[in-house]
Image (cartoon, rainbow, N blue to C red):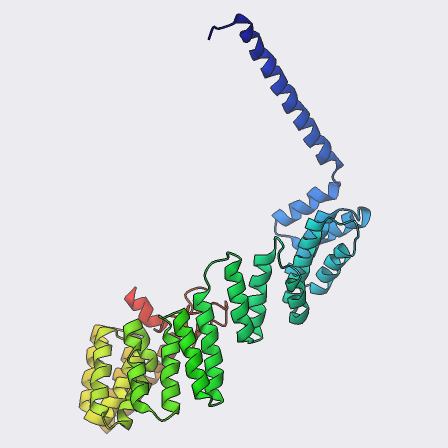
Length: 391
């Protein structure tokens, strides 16, 4: 291929054409920016400076002057919702949906935003109806996620299972953990109403979905115990250690009570002590403390508490040690020891909390479903002070 000199003449030509195109784009951008209402930039500045109230006032004025500004309607509705003025947000999005000239894409967006308004306002029936209209739309995954939240709020676990499966089909990720927990909720309701066979069948479904579901095993043991089958209940609860040794603390008292019913209290205490050595826990120590006091006496209790405090130095452990020391103390020093015990107990109670690993919500009792962030299985089975010592 031979080089032609006239090709060199094309370089300045292409440069000139590129420069002209850039100038046209810049002029168009400047023209469009000048066509925007002046208040638009003022409102945007308020938003950037975290002043949503002032931004709302500015955008309201713009919308009055230019009712066709659809994007500003969306911005205004979202601001109303964020500020808690859900009625005004609902009106904004309803007005958008009432416009016959609104493009399909923006109408779908307005419907999704309206569902969000209803959800924020607690109008769950209206929110559910709105989200169901978004099937096979670009907002289908978000709508199904919101429906799943609604069914969990209303404790409609069967519908929550359907919604979770539908969400999986949308490509929104696996929901096996949540589905198994929904089955556990249904089983727990069945157990409350003494429908033991239905509860067992439901728990089998939970384990088929998530074989590592500790809660399903615990509930299965509860079902056997409610039927008077202590041996099966005991064997089932012991399966917890195969799934998660730290979670054994949640069934420690159940295990100890079952061994007592079978007249094997000492065997039960030995098992609890083995768990305590493998995975120290204040809940395990509490169960071992009571059983040791009952079976072996005060001296054995003091030795147990002292050994655990050396191994895991916590205020919760110190509190148990002082319990033992107070029982064995001579009458003349008991009042002073009781004062120390009460002081330690007060501080220990503040640390005896379970804490959600997702949102940090603290609670006195263990939850499978966090009351703060509504996530499942986010509570470690240990108290906050124990976790701090371990870390």
